[in-house]
Length: 446
Image (cartoon, rainbow, N blue to C red; front, side):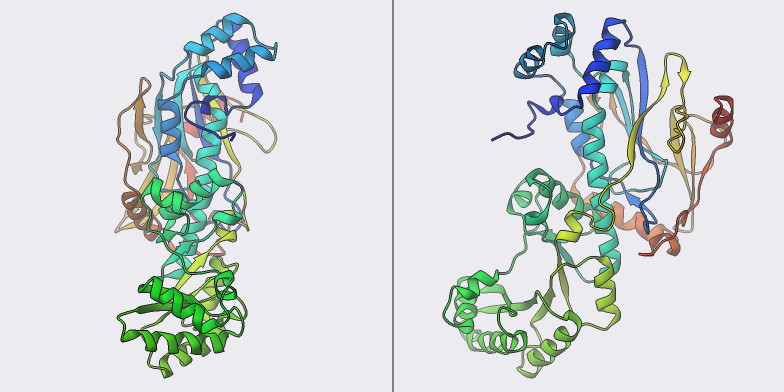
């Protein structure tokens, strides 16, 4: 089955990266160059982004090597000369990388990742780095917004079946965890990333039995330590009554029914009715879980209506970041042998020079960011980009997902309230250019 793997990942590259690299090679152009990855501007209603995807980026650079099969394929195209293909076969990443740690919040135009390497190496990394960092940053941000809407209630990633490919589903599960998801329904993601697994049952299970109560009874007995019963296959309220009856019936057997799940209809009204049904039956300990095309907006609305929902399963709209399904991420050359460079295209101007981002903080609150030239003196704040690779070698170990979740929670909590709003306006958080960077932009004709 075709699949992106450690062996073929370097071939995950746009053709023009290779044709440019071949031209650089033919002209002996391979001096050190610096590229930076950033997001031009925040999507609508986003007051912040959550940096994510760095671990995949570093693993890719750490293992960068074109396999023999890829070289043979490129040879078959008849596009590249043999000297370049032989050089490509010997190529390994030898550069330095600076990055914003995963889980940190970032904003438009701020570099999330900086690569300084021989020009050919840095150029060839573009496609994979953009794919890894932009996608996971988009999903981690969506998850962080869902976490804000949920407050102290947990939510779980239910998106695998609706995500845009199997690999995307794995990355969604990981990024959603960084953003605040308490678990995932995706078993492979649980295995690979050590995520907590969560699941209930499908309507097909209930339909496979002659009677809804029989289905509930069988499932609870087979999973006696905390089954969650799906109650809306037929009539939701009657399903809740049957779930409560089964829960009471099986207590004597030591079987615990943990809760019920609502997956359709007017969730706010149904949750109130189902809560009354459960409480009246002596099942106040059963929790109510809800799913069905949820996102941060719908969850916020449900809780504003006082819906007694204890936890949420969020699928399609999380895994596709439905209201903002892409980030305008770019990977731009900012410095080369001639020094700082700047793109002047209308609407796509790039900021020149090797940069750092400084965050001003006071009394546990983030106040403003300054994008400055790296090493520029007199810029106040905490530097965000940290060196993670030197001369092609990782210099920091992988971080646990728990550490990334903690960083995200702390970083989001430090933001001013306007930036945390689900309907944040543009520039809800101030980001400015330093005096040195503004001067460089002016000198280069910006």
